[in-house]
Image (tube, rainbow, N blue to C red; front, side):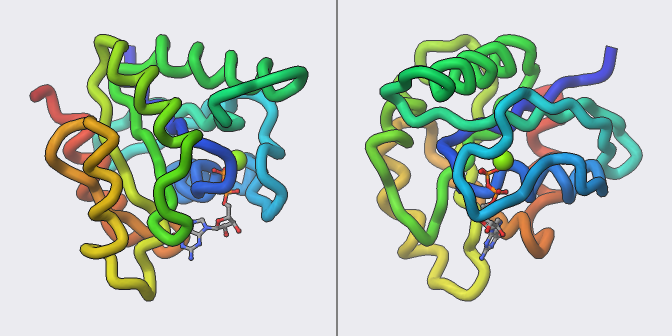
Length: 163
Ligand code: GDP
Ligand code: MG
């Protein structure tokens, strides 16, 4: 069995962009329309010759109804399937109540969770990420720019390492 990495977070934080970079496909829908990827999407990827499965998800708002509830359910199932969870937040948009709702959920799970601030390209990353420490998911906010690949190999190497 290959290790499984789930990408979760509210819509528009860059999950599909990261999925595409990892799997080198355009299969995941990347769009400026939040929440377009309705279902879980599986891909195979590898980092430094270590293969793994990555799951893209549609996203969680935190107070779901209708189609959004199904989307959120898919995200929770992805978390259950995962060995490591990458919880993406948007360093440009800042902390939102949806981020807090997702963090509350993830803190209760017995999973390896990595808090990942995406879109750090062209901004003062250290000050942008400061507010995310309040999510209570450990003392590291991993910084990446999924669109450019910055920080991605480092992050996945860490996420896939046994400790
Ligand atoms: P998802 O809803 O979480 O899957 O988010 P998407 O991957 O669809 O990305 C949402 C938007 O953020 C798109 O317009 C992406 O081009 C943009 N985006 C994703 N990653 C980055 C990044 O590293 N830097 C910047 N500046 N924009 C990004
Ligand atoms: Mg998406």
